[in-house]
Image (cartoon, rainbow, N blue to C red; front, side, top):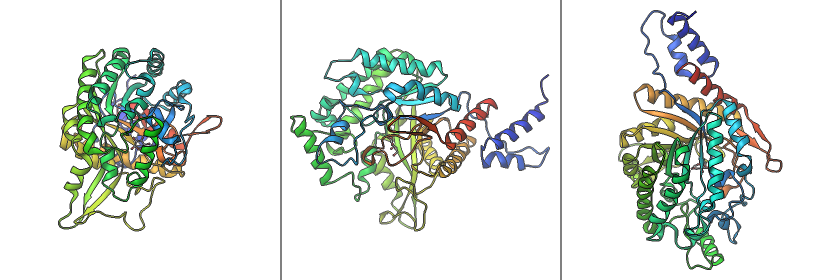
Length: 448
Ligand code: BGC
């Protein structure tokens, strides 16, 4: 027999709280019985709960990529090379089954250009077959495959011809996108051209960053030499004056190529966002926002969705970016622990682009999993407040499923819900994995 609606609602509320869905759910319980409550809006049908990963960070042995070379030349900025990473190239079935078992219904991952087009114009049928199997495994387990065409890595040959500094780069990237979509488009649930298209801008906004300067130039020179070239350009260490216009054109052309191919799914671009907070009179927050987002907000506004990727906030006064507040809790990545940045950046992205939003990354590097749980609760609460206010947010993909290769920092910064033993590759879910999985499950079960 169907329960009366009032009883169903009560049960929903109890279960929400038990599942740790946080403060907003609790506040609706606190409302006086019988009074109309400022009811929380339900999440959109089919809201995606899941995790995000990147090919180079989990697959292992991405030997044909620019990063592999940069990790292994001398001098290098990389604390250690990626080597086997999480061996997900072979263990993807296990990863996908685990994500599904945890309770998720979407899975973000990259298809690796360096594997798919190992030599210019030569496409690997085996690599495309591999990603077809990965996507089929997602579907078989009820996970929507959310695809990244380029998560910073490019083929070595592309870097050695100057990467996105080369005038042919837009057409080359679009050709890769067209070939990959021809095979894999029917299996994609959503896709972005570039991961954090503005990443070099974000890095360069901080002149003290170790990711700019002479050490970077020396590493790239060593890569050029090892490639028998006089140049070697990387997305992460980009010379924006030479590459950004081409990267924008590459996005535009790839966007068209993907849309023209088979499959029917939204295509967007993901942006690395920080909650830029102005402090005091004459603060330069707007100037800093323009500096870190550059042309990418306008690009996102023309796409099907914007992928919001947020980790922290920055405070900006009249002199520019301020140091992290004294006594603030720092994550392993050195960022301020500030989960509410997610809600603020969602609002910014919605206001500036007017497009639907997927949170394509949000997370924390920490060895203290209780802080990850706290981060998730507060970040998700800030996202849900946006949805309550009518903002069109369609999914939350946590960074990351696995402890993985954190670029120049190697394996020491751990962003995973699941620990990985780098020798045996055994996966062990942390309490935070069960926590977010339970949130996903109960939200789906309750239509909340
Ligand atoms: C990137 C990921 C990275 C994560 C944590 C994001 O900027 O897309 O590749 O691992 O942040 O630093």
